[in-house]
Length: 310
Image (cartoon, rainbow, N blue to C red; front, side, top):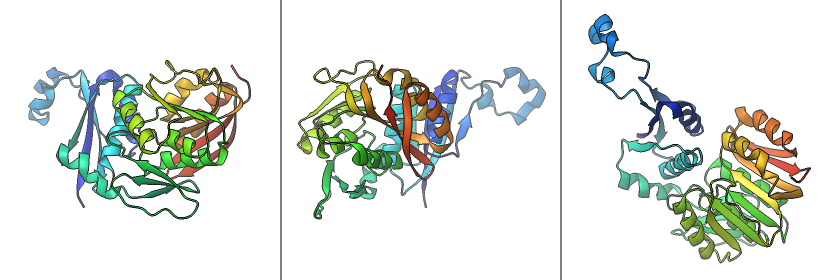
């Protein structure tokens, strides 16, 4: 089996956040941080310290994970970039061990029709699939946007969405990536949906995917988390989905209540199980009650109901 190294290089002050993002892909990370190494140590330890380390830029550091050939590298890259953008971190992402053309296209062979929820099937646009009776088909061309239905966080979020959204509901998807959750909501009967992402490339992908699925009730636009969110028809949303990461959900929690009606649902995903209790504590303190959760392979998606509209 061959492995590829995904390496993120950032300013030293952002390293802890980058490490948290990378551990969402794999807990085994490799960190290169030489900021504590002083050039004067050369006189003490001689050739034990490599000259390149002594002369390296001490203001930057890097964090790497290794992924196997059967993983979707493009989706990992998109996930990392989305989280970097959400945290306003400028960083360089490299894939070592394979060239850009290979990882940007070869992942398609691992992306097949994927069931999510109880009735929905995500079908890549280049695949042929004959729908079974009662199935809802989501036709996706993810491009470089996160959200193909293959990742545990997306599937868990889609399951909670299918179980709790009602016909006529208004939905807001924050950090929407490919737009998959808004499309699922639309096909499950939502009256109107808003899908926002900080990345303009992701928003363009959302628009294309919404059109591909004939979902004309989805408004896609750029927003830094909740900063530019607009209510539809002046109504608070019935359901808000946020498939991001624990730190961002915690950061958004005090403001989510401004956009969701009392009795409405917040579906939060992208949370590693070790952070579940921490997210619970913050979100419940902001006027929500936890009423459900789903877990898979170390990931958690949580369902909250808004108890007091802000």
